[in-house]
Amino acid sequence: MVSRPGSPYEQQLSDFRLTYSKAGSVTSIVLVLAGFGLDYFSYPERLLEFSLLRVFVALLTLGVFFVLFTPFGRSNVRMLTMLWLLLPQIMIAWMIFVTDGAGSIYFVGLHLALYAVGIILPITFFEGVGFGVLTLGLYVAACVLHPGTTDDTSRLVTNSLFILFSAAASAVCTWFNEKARIRLFSLQHEVLEKNASLHEINATLAEVKGQLIQREKMAAIGTLSAGLLHELNNPVNYSLMAIDMGLTCPGVEGDAMLKESLGDAREGMQRIQNIVSDLKTFAYQKPGQDAQRPFLLGNALRSALRLAGYELNGIDVPVELPQDTHVLGDEPAIIGVLINLLSNAAHALQAARREQPRISVTVAPHGPRLQVKVRDNGTGIAPENIGRVFEPFFTTRDVGAGLGLGLSVSYGIVQRHGGTLSVDSEPGAWTEFTFDLPRPP
Image (cartoon, rainbow, N blue to C red; front, side):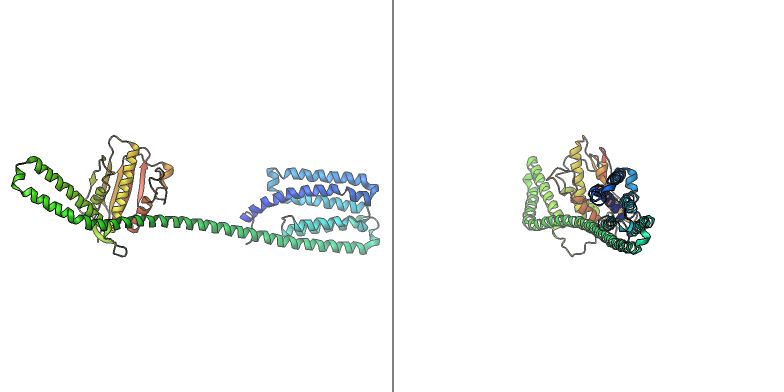
């Protein structure tokens, strides 16, 4: 990973450098003032002069420290860091100049600053090299300008070489520290990317889980229906035969009440027969069978209306159908989609408490497909929710009133048929769901 200006690494490093620069400047102030003891034992005759100098440098560094808290300081932290780093070096170089030149003990302070910068501060390799070169230049200038240094050339060269070695070691430390920071940031970036990827995987798994739960529910309905068919079909047929035979009896024509009662019983048995017939659709469609078959969408819609009849009680449900409603697809799944849309519309109407609740179902040709629209005059969908209605587990119902999977599963079913389930709504007025299905060639 290469560090580039404006890169995420540089942005993170800027905050890191600012924190360390503040802490480092305070440390520098403490060490500069702590040098009073060194001055007292090494050059007591210059104690006052050096003490004033140390206080002056400490005040300048303190000024830089406060500037680091300003917007200017945050945007120029690198320049300000190099400034307060050089202040003690300049001070030490001047002390070397006014004391013993190449023989001054203060040159050790230059080494300490070089090592501290290389090991602790987050500066770049080139900044580290520049700091080392400037330190060496200050030392050589202080010694050369000091009277009598020409008589001690060997010590000047020796100390200069030591400073050069320290500067090289500091630069190497700076290089490896910078590489380590870049590597650390790279690892952090990889972890964040993997966490984001895991979040997407978890969301996908949650969606798959929701679909599996819904399919299990549908499979349970199918299993229940299969058992009920055998248990209900025979007694229903026997009852219908008995009622039909009763209606043919001569005495029935003369008893209006008996004839009406037998007619009501026959109508009730036929309704039971229709419900059982509708449930067959779920019971006998097994996984692995060809789900792309021609069927009449009109019949599927009538089945859905009967199965959702309890929730649609008291609601006006006008239906508009074209003459030909043949479509190609998975009839049980489409019935499930229609039941879900009708059920959701019924719940919206219950919440709206309309005087004239209405759910209109319109089927019309749309190119080579049939388009279905289910529109209610319920509460509508809030703008902040309309983009989330197809998300798994998203629901605006009370806790325990629904899992929020119906529309997500329905969206997948329509998508499997090459169509799109979409929604449009006006909050407080109406909601309309639209999907389309392919017609047989």
